[in-house]
View 1 (tube, rainbow, N blue to C red):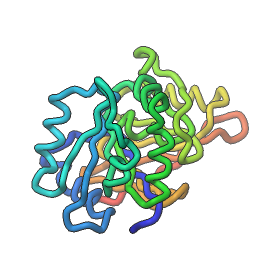
View 2: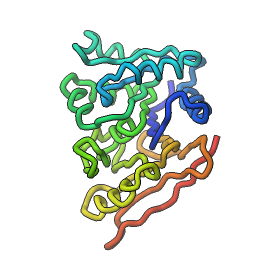
View 3: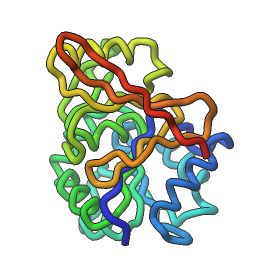
Length: 229
């Protein structure tokens, strides 16, 4: 079983041909020929079309299941989650998602799964949720800072090139005391071993990630070149 790993996608179009190689790379982190993949669509209000999209995208490469909290979660939630090799968390409203997770204890179960070697991953809400904090549109289009699960120190910002307000707002928040952290453009995955960033990976040309921090009186942004696969 591999050690603790987290993969956060700044943006990901599940099942799109240009993302196939990146999805294969993600599945390969489990070291299983046909991994057991758990899709968690809480942030998207468990949109059934999103669920079908994920099943269709991965059905020939993994044994796919999904986790629902309505009308209630599985009776043996811990065993259900830990019975998978890879957890993929979809995008949507991060604040609503985390509130539901915490009510049912999924936050602590995911921490246990991470420590046990289950690969944790996701896009947008499913990216920032693993960090100490994240930049989110959960409260409106203005983008706000919020506290997340804290498995990885620092903050995270997805869609860094896909939404024009993301970069300036992240800089503004960090300048105001929000923890510095990581930003990923659409199509870029940040791969963490434990707390440490191993690499940024992409299947798209010209994409990058960034380390954003407050130094002195200003915010600095260090480029992290993404390895193209």
